[in-house]
Image (cartoon, rainbow, N blue to C red; front, side, top):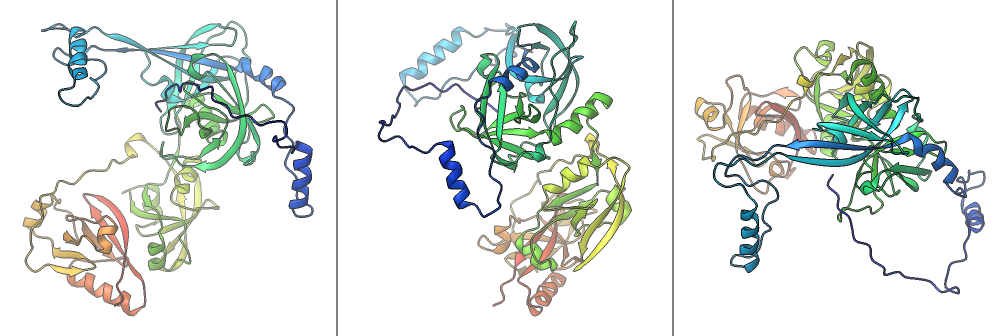
Length: 508
């Protein structure tokens, strides 16, 4: 995450002695005792200070600096930053253009390689010299230097890294054992508990900040296993990869990102929980990479409409959009359209929860998976596989031509539907093995438009039954109306990417 130094202002608001609040910790405790139910446990009081704890932990926190060689651009290209944008004809436009032109290579001259440096943080987890940090701190680095609190420098080598959780493990070779810290139980830390963040913000050196755990299980779209801890302890550029400690001096998180419109800390920082990071670090030690469980499915959220169409009492679980041929799920008998309710005895709250549970499951372990299929619960025995890089699927953008009127098209729920023909396969770049009913047009103000459907989509199933003609689709919609259902579930194929869409039915 790109951050910037925010200039300090000296404007300060002060309270007069008479206006200052008189509530102290003892008064707050009395107030809390009056407000809390009888027998409720009071929160731990604020510590008198963090000096003793910080003195113990600082030697285990390191600064990580990296250098990277950036190759010069080809002749004719402009290396370095772009010219700032100014209104056409502005005198500043000519000024900056002249300035940049004077500093560019001319003719066939090749721009010289440049050395870029960056700073981050890390912490020692083994006295022999193993250091944990974020992967993005050392990504693409040609050289990595680890600096201890006493300014001792070591050249570091990468033991392994995991891009999905953003963790890297480094090794240095000290002449004597290093001060190290241990991972704690991040699940045991409650929202409101005190935490310490130690790192190297802005390259200033070892810095300690204190705050509380603000929230848990935050998703910030950083990766497939988002489960961040949120804190209000100040975290800035250079803190990435540094540890977040509980009051026992255990690492409960790895500081990774902040939310900030200005680039500086505004009290919203995020850390990878230790219970997610520790297994990854342990696997990198042994295998050089993380080994994760694999189910072999693509999943999506269970919305209110999907839950109603499937007969679920509320949105829960993870809806399987497709299964990988030969994958663990398919071998066990799990199908597209099933909703995973529990996995290995653990409840699946939503689609984001399932990948984390599967990833943490030991490879080759046989587990019980409870699914919801056609308004009943079913249980399958699944032997968990190992996730490989090639098992990750990338979305493909469909190549579409502008849709035109299709003779004999049937309209339903704002969709214009037609049988697949060679002409329509060519128009929407559909493969020969694509089967179903093609959408040729979508009304702009229809339920289908709201759900993101578009021309070129192919409807494969309606109400979990295959369809091969527009008439079958309208028949399924009529059946749903007569049954009093508010929505109908469709399995849609978009250039090989399967997903379920629940469309509201107009009972009128």
